[in-house]
Length: 382
Image (cartoon, rainbow, N blue to C red; front, side, top):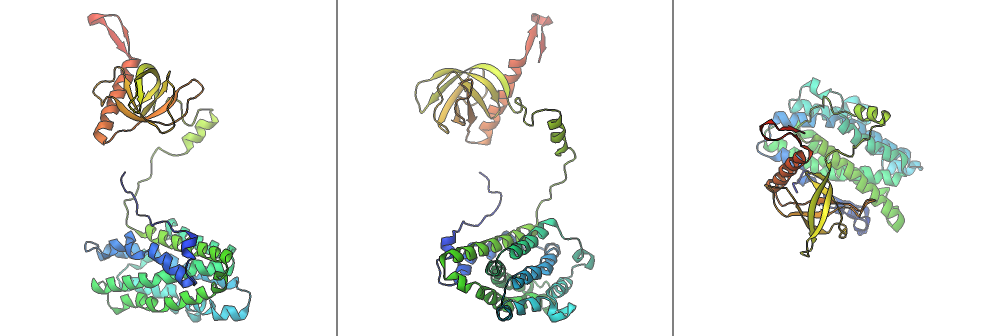
C-alpha cells in the first residue's frame, strides 16, 4: 500500500497523564508530535528548497498569528479570579497585543519578518486560505466553550512546541542566508519568550492535574491543541494543487435523487451475468457455482455454501482467458436473499490486476454479444 501522508503515532490520555506535572504531559506529547520531523520543516531544511518558495509558504501563517491572541483572550475570560488572571494569562494577552501599540503586536512584528525575508506586501495581505482559518477558528472555538484549564492546555501546548519551531526557523534563516538579523529577530524572540508563556498557561492546569478525571480532560485539551497546530503546518506544506472539476459536481446526484434514480445504480462497476464458476476454500475440493454478477474487481457467487467472512478462496471462471487462473479472492459478504455472496479479487501486483480486469471486460463483452446469421453474413450486436 503506498504511503500517502505522514501521520504521528497514537498516544493515549493515560500516557499523557503518566507524568507528575502538566509539563511532563506536554513533553510526552511533544515527542509524538515532533515538529522537527513534520514534513513542512523537513521540506524547509532541504537543500533544494528556495527562498521564493519558503516566502510563499510563510505568508498564510500571518493570519494564524493575528487570531491566536483571540484564543488566549478567551482563556483569560474564563478565569474567574482577577488575581489568577493577572498571575497567569494576562501578560501573555497584553504582549500579543503589543501593550497597546499596534506596531508592537505579534501580528505586526511577524509582518515585519515577512518583509525582511523579501515577501511582497500584496502577497502578505492576501485573503486567509480556508485551510489556515480552520486551524485558528478550531482553537478559538475550543477555548470559548471549555473551562479555562482546558483552553490553557490547548494554547499552552502551542506555545510549548513553538519553542522548537522558532529555533528551527531562526537557525534555517541564518544558515541559508535568507535575511539579516531583522529576518531572524521574530523567531529568536519567540524561542525565548514562549517558554514563559507556556509555563504561565500550564500554571492554570496544575491543580486539575492532581485529580485523575480533570487530568484526563487537560490531557485531551493538550492533544486537541497540538493536533490542530500540527494540521496548520500540514496546510502550509507545498502541494500539488487539484484543479476544480468541470463536470463531477454534486448537483447531478441531487437531480438524480429527485428523479428517483439510484445514487449507486446496481449495474455500476459490475454486470449481471450467468457464468459457470468453480470455487475452493483453503485448498479443499472445487465446488461448482454460478457468477450472477461480475466486474473487474470481483463477482457475486451463488450455488455454493459461503465460507466465513474475509476467508481466502480461489475462483476459476469458465471462458476467462489471458488472466491469472485460478484467481485468488476474499469473501466480502454473507449470503444474500438469493444465496449469492460477494467475492473481491485479491491479486499481488498491478500487472496481474490489469490482466484480470482486461479478461473480465472481454468476457462481459462476449456475454452481451448476440450473433444474427452465420458465416460471412453474421452480424454481432453488443
